[in-house]
Amino acid sequence: MQYPIVIAVTVWLSGYVDSRKIRGISLAYRRFYKEKPSFLCIDGSKLIPFTQVNDDYCDCLDGSDEPGTAACSNGRFYCTNLGFRPYYIASSRVNDGVCDCCDTSDEYNSQTRCNNTCRKLGQKERAEVENQIRSMNEGLHLKRQLIKDGINMWQEKQNQLKDLKMASERLQRKLETQRKAKQKADTDKDTLTGLQRLKALAVPRNPQAAATSPLSVFQALDANGDGSLTAEEVQAGVAILEDKTRSLTHAEAIDLLGGFGQVGFSGFQETLLWDRLRTGDGLEVKDGPKMKPHEPDSEAAVEAAVQAAEDATADLKKVEDALEMMKLEIRDLEEALSADYGADKEFMYLQSQCLELTVYEYTYTLCPFNQVTQRNSQGEQTIVLGKWRSWDGPPGNEHSKMKFDRGEPCWQGPTRSTLVTLTCGTETVLRSVKEPSKCQYVMELQTPAACQPLTPRRSVHSEL
Ligand code: MAN
Image 1 (cartoon, rainbow, N blue to C red):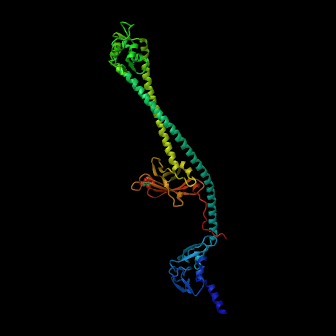
Image 2: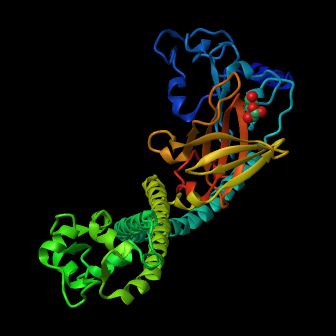
């Protein structure tokens, strides 16, 4: 009985640690290392005597016979790390003088003195997770408000669009009316200025005639004002100077009208009738005094017609411009409403915002759903780093990234583009901008709208 005691004491005194003790394996793998006469490599490739497990010589291709030594280059050592999180390290790091497992288990046979830091690390990580959860919950709370805001904004825009469409229909009708009004005003003006031109061409031969004009004479004779002079109207309106009791016969009237039963104003000026009236050659207009008041009236009428045509043109232009503006507004609204603002329109509020961040000599401006720009510190130059393209997150999480492309071309490089990653936070803020490769920018935009309810994550040992 003395021998074993002596050996045990000797071993304890020399600080010998039995590396054959099964270390560096997780609970799930324990079953492979139950002491039996032989050990089957976990990949099933080889059967070896159990004494060769952890004998510091690598037998199994998968390194499974040496979980507790550095013998196998592909071996891995499981740190249990009670109080923190278990993890694997390469078995080459076992007893290498560096503390890798926070529970010190990897340096069981080295000179290095390791302190167990698992509890501290666990506490720190738990505090971080709690903080994250708190900020996530706060973010989710804010997100609910953003969803409400988004839906309201959406509804408001829909209403605006509806109102604008109705207003544009009204304006369209007004435009038609205005076009007709302008057409009429133009015709009136053309008619009256035409008449005036013709009047100016007619040269009077005597002072009495000089006081009249073909238009005023024509109007005086055109009793029914229909713009044409008939033989009957000539008979009724023209007096024979020699014998004012006698009226012109129908045949004489037709002769005076150049052989026609009736003439318009321009034809009238070519007739013998106008020539004789103009020169006072045996004929005069019976209702002479009426002729004078027509003169200023016609001048004023021409002026009024020119003014009315100008006004109608200006009014039409106003309606056309207003309609054009309205169409642009409708197009912008329709474009804004056609974008994807997230499953619950939680990103809608970003549509009307721009966020800025200055990094070194540049100030970056991100206008979600619109464009990204870069301005140098002197503010002389603003470069477009991309125009809104689409959401670009991975399938199932599309709304986690925004893509902006078609930016300004880069000297000896690609067209500028920007990828924005959205992260959860309690504020809406542009967190970072980087240019990992020339003219390709990446940004981080923090927003409550990106918060998602937490999915269960790897747990931290909570027993300590
Ligand atoms: C500007 C900026 C930079 C970019 C260079 C490329 O200086 O847009 O971000 O790298 O042009 O020439």
